[in-house]
Length: 110
Image (cartoon, rainbow, N blue to C red; front, side, top):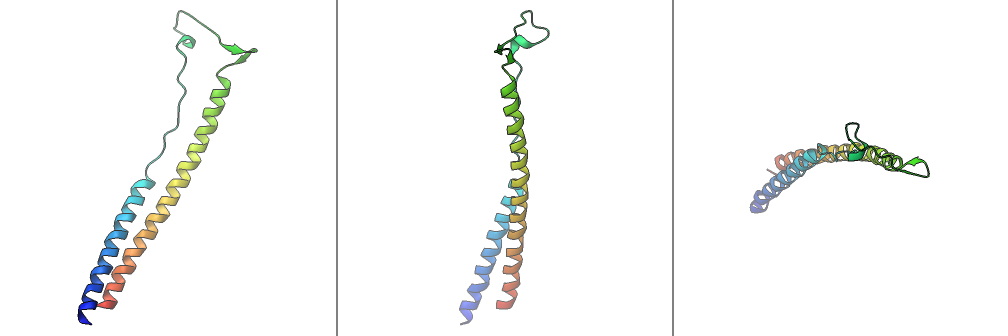
């Protein structure tokens, strides 16, 4: 029976290390963001360009739908980054509680 108890604290220690690694991974992941996208100006629309061209469809600016899409997509990315950061931070905190529980259990088994 004494050999089983000796092995039990090693198992708790392995779990504690595993959960600490997972906590570290989620903490690092919570700090990563997806950058917003930018529209590059068309070369012929530059003020210093010798050739000035206006492109439109039925009198509407051709870049307006793209600008609207980029704005909406960047808003989505901002929401996603905020949600991802919150979720990974909570997961890291949860994984920090697990090794504390495992270490606490080691003292009960020894």
